[in-house]
Length: 107
Image 1 (cartoon, rainbow, N blue to C red):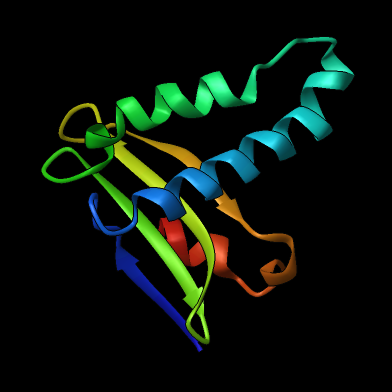
Image 2: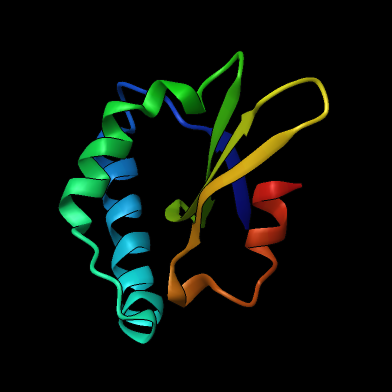
């Protein structure tokens, strides 16, 4: 069973960092090599973690998805105005894909 919940900044920090790292490693493997672009995963993760508060209320949400108590993915949402928002760092671990979790994370 899938459960979605708002990440807790202090309790989930390590888990968020792991998911962001997995996401950026996936980006590096699948996109940056094809586009011939360099990406320093650890520097980008450190930058994201330093700005993590932007993903929390009132201007954002950082939602974690778990399946049978195993964390399966993350989705960051930020608002830029009343009707404008952005999806950031949406990632579902490979073993949990094709189950509709991505749709649930942004829904």
